[in-house]
Figure (cartoon, rainbow, N blue to C red):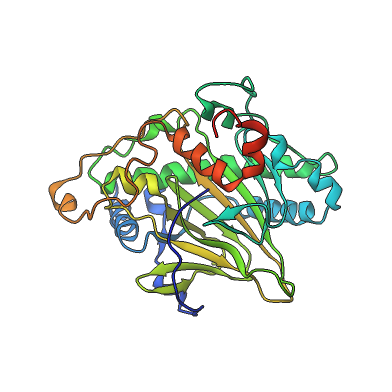
Length: 346
């Protein structure tokens, strides 16, 4: 899920990975009130206020789950085209399912990637449900010939939900809030979102835009990627490479957290450029977002932090009901789903 951002006129560059911080969550997970936890909270806040990206280690997720979801992703994209297209996203009002190459749009341009989207397993509401964002809930679509995909996806999403709550609690503590300030927007359930993405090796005449420069619209995004590279983060006037680090998830913040903190926490623009001519790229993005009915209101910052809050660039994003903004962005990104399921609200 992406929000708009103006293109950046710069060429691809390579920079040391150390330009993005690497933070160990383990002390905070063991004892959120201990001295090691306090250091992690301070480092998390600095990363969220500065680059808006950080690598997280010590998250407690079994590496076997990462291996399983990667294997399932590769198996899915190896299925015959007719099996993938049988669960096309346009069949789902909840935007769950397979998106063909070039069918998703960022900044008016087609992204050169194919993907499959998932959310929590839910019952489908009525086709004319109001408010319309209620239709974003529903069942996932699963390929009949690949039952391992369901198990891998649902187990990995459960594990990443714990990582998301831990990270959000650390940020709340850093902002001077109760660490559990936002728990009610996620517990016992939330409207999280998962994308498994393949960026194919480019062919003559195809775009190099894996996904265009954008900011994410939600709260926190966690990225598990292979070692091909191509993810770039905007730091000032440069695009900095953000490659895979074994055992780490790359976390970035979205527009809703930026808006809720008056810009103190930062939603940073990023993009993906196409892989080398001889390789595909696989990436798995987990969007840790609140329930669609959550207002996710602004917070009162301590004076020292408020003095350094520049104001949010995305006024009102997600602050009435998160689902309203989420639906707006999805309708723009997936016009095929919009035509099939949302003609009454276009």
